[in-house]
Amino acid sequence: MPNLDDDLKKELLETDEEFRRLFEEHQNHKQRLNVIKEKSFLSPEDETEAKQIKLHKLGLKDRMEEIARMYRQEQVPA
Image 1 (cartoon, rainbow, N blue to C red):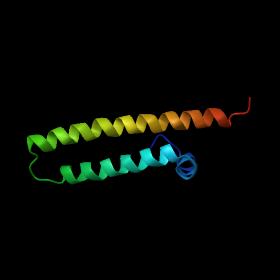
Image 2: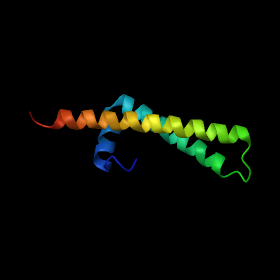
Image 3: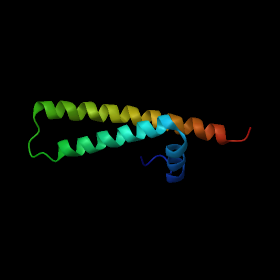
């Protein structure tokens, strides 16, 4: 996740259960997508699965970014 700085990502992984769950799910999808991409021939089912994984990964990333944004806002003194 290049948009989150490493310190913030590390802190959220340690302190936020939802963020940690989303991150782990995102990593699992990333690994599955790599397995699909390594195939020399993609069946129509593989292509469909890859598209679904990419969409789901994007949704997970968006939610993680939202959590990070909310966390940053909470850390700014009023």
